[in-house]
Image (cartoon, rainbow, N blue to C red):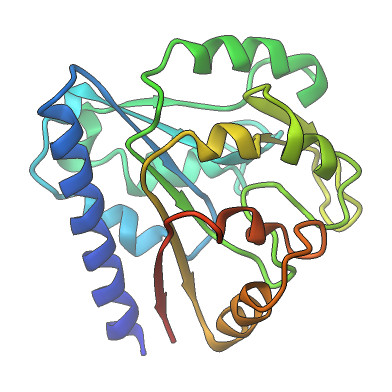
Length: 221
């Protein structure tokens, strides 16, 4: 099973590297948007070893818990530990948190930071939870409607099912990309994806916001 996931991670890393190379042939900088969690770790490690002009690549997150960057559950910490290594250490990582006490207070600073990056992003890597959430677009979040509809780049999110407040790229900002890849593992998530593909209520399963457009699905058991 693990070998299948490792193969999937390598295939996804090769696809992302190819996309970054194609965009860097046309413009000076390229932007990669990644997701946190345990699923992408082998993908991060495979991508970090790829031969790319990493000094011209910016990396940011689809979403983040509003915690210190060195906290155990920080997505930034995960990215720094597994992606910003080896050749990829030359890339520029742009976090989604600030020194503000809450994401609501930090949204403006983070928005300004993101505005300086090269949009549209070259690639957005999405994950998905068992509840159908992607990024921090959770079905039980009061801010889901806003995150799905706003033209703002980021939204502060508070969700009853999650212990920490979060900040997430809006659906509009995530859509500003020619290439979206969904990286998931396990039978449970395949079942959830099947349910998502069979209906259209985005509030029930927010991953549906990305199923209508081109989406490369990378799944392994």
